[in-house]
Amino acid sequence: MPKYKYLQMPAYTGAVDKSGANPPRLTLLVKSALHHQEQRQAIRKTWGYESRFSDVHIRRAFLLGVSADGSATSAIEQEAKEYGDIVRADFVDAYFNNTVKTMMGIRWASEHFNSSDFYMFVDDDYYVSIKNVLRFLGKGRQTHHQSLLFAGYVFQSSPLRHKFSKWYISLAEYPFDKWPAYVTAGAFILSRDALLQMYKVSRSLPLFRFDDVYLGMVALKAHIPVHHCDGFHFDRPKYYGPESYSNVIASHGFSNPTEMQHIWNECRSANYA
Picture 1: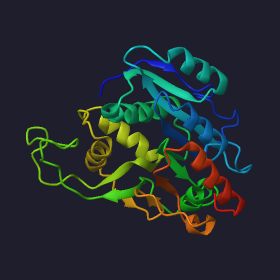
Picture 2: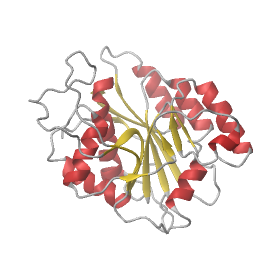
Picture 3: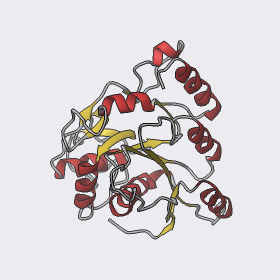
Picture 4: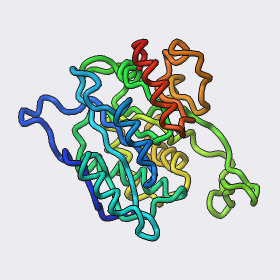
């Protein structure tokens, strides 16, 4: 796995309470596009708000690359200075570099902030209920899950061989009929042990352009089973009011940050967020 140079890291990088007694329960690693300032602001005000629960230590970081032409650099640097929550490295921030972005986040967490119990990777077009995330993980410092947890919405599918498809994969690239079982990369949770083990394995495994499939390959090689959870939604559930989202952990399909904020605020008022 190639190593890219970090241009920004969060202000808390490497920090743990002096007593060592209060590492984060959950660290949120949000994969965001450079020009998605509105999405990042909406997340900071809603599910990414670090002080949402007074008795649960939560950290937040946004994962970014750089633009091909160098634009947006000053704006991102100012944003990083103001909020102290950006991890940025010198790779081009583009769709087919999502694997690079995800693995950059795993590398940062493994090498520079590896004290968290769990790590949740999320795209910036998601609704998330941190209350339901914490309920899924278990109370206190305990959890009912195995130490190697890789959880989310699990797919089992085959490579697309149609040459005109955006997701076309040739036999030379991947000669097998089935992908390994994989968790959609839009939202997934790793335990600390799983994160460290997947990072270790990934260092000797060439990158693959589909990030979710690549993580499935890494998990398979690392002997980490994928865990399906119905609270993760790849297709956005219809919203009929807060009750309809009472069991949603994470849902794709919120490219409009204003709409996401509105729904999250309603769910929070109903004690579901």
